[in-house]
Image (cartoon, rainbow, N blue to C red; front, side, top):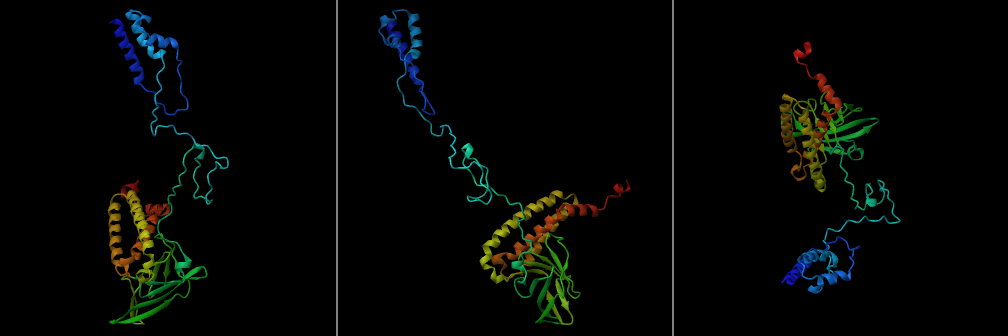
Length: 353
């Protein structure tokens, strides 16, 4: 009975030894244990090998897993658990990153030496997403039309300055049913007023009809006298001048997709810059800025409703939004901030100190 029990103990030891299979991540190396004949005879021999001593049998049962080798078992290689080996640099490749403008795309940090896959560099736009530059090939010498039709404006270079030529379509004074036209041309260069609202501004300094022109790439925002119209008494004609002057509305069909992309960027830029304006505002300035922004949205809707085919292309909405962004960014400039602080009246208590 004792011998049979020891046999069961030995068998149990073998089962426990085989229950833990070897799990390797790679099969490049495997340690092999020696296969001594003594272990086989001791563990699998007949009972007379170790007699009827219970202590000796228990010791043999515990030592048998160490004295006998395990039978060969299939190695389990877990998918995804294999070690990542570093890729070797091909002999002909350079470890230097690609130079900007070279073949293969933008410049990225070299990762080949670390065995990592290269990713294209992400370029984040840093400049304003609005128009507002002088683009002589598209603006100068091109006819621009008020609200995409009717009165026309042409800006040209005049030496180091800019000259303007207008053909204003209006209605006869006292007879609104009759149409009239007034031609205006600057005798010299327009008066340059800098960029107070972020866009180059020029003035047609005519006593009968002074007009301020904020110049963009392919459009001009004009602001005339109070009421938005000029009255020419001698010609008995009254003509509207305030509004957006741009290409004919019926000619913008092929550019609809480009305008839509520009509008999306302009709307995003407006939200971003307006948040910055509100962050700098203090006290009642917050309410004033919010009211001004709401007023701009209302004026834009009313003004662009007059642009020909605006519902089809959205050109007017896009350009006025871009101009608004340029104005708010100019307001956030360090120089404008310093001037605003200088003009802010100090409280009486602070002034007394």
